[in-house]
Amino acid sequence: MHRPVLAAFAATALLGGTALAQPAMNFPPPAMNPAALPAGHYVSDPHHTALIMRVRHMSMTYSTFRMNKVDASFDYDPAHPTASKVTATIDANSFDQGDAKISDTFAKEFLGADKNPTITFSSTSIKVIKGAHGTMTGDLTLEGVTKPVTLDVTFDGSRPAGGMGPARAGFSAKGVVKRSDFGKLAMPDAIVGDNVDVTLEIEFTKAS
Image (cartoon, rainbow, N blue to C red; front, top):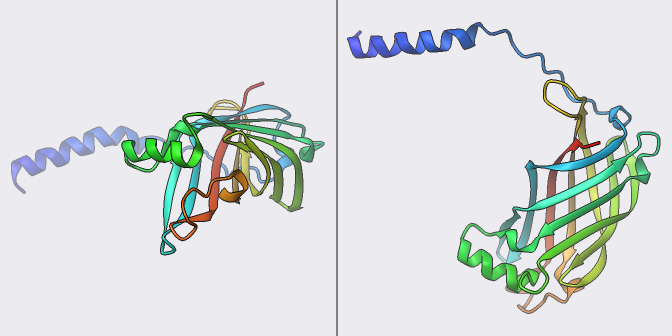
């Protein structure tokens, strides 16, 4: 074995030796029973929150977009989970298509971000369908127009407070928003579809 290769191998072994000697972290699976989540006020973790939108383009493919600034919160009582009140605020100017210039244009054209920079959602009812699955209906306000929207929600688990910080809970939600409900059909449906598929992956931390 050539000396440079041998030296690199030895250095790697020495540097990694300490890490390899560390005991495996005891990281049990999350609790899947919502009753295990402590009561309190929860806020979204911006580093583990994603709002993705998908819309049909020219009746051929789907264009995918992301909203980069989403703030959500809810108050939770494990004895009355369906009484939880969920609110969310989305910065319409955080619309991200992958190109800064196009994203800015689309934010104004499709979301009216220049005149109504804030999109809001406020839940009005929560229903448990089975186990960790349910639905959440709420009022979505987009460009000054408010319409009811229903999302299919999955509780992805929770973790108690401890070495990883405060108690956490994860949720996934999916739904469809019709552009025509908010007066957004400036472009023909054949170019930009009316239905916008919405997917939300969000992790909450207990704030109080």
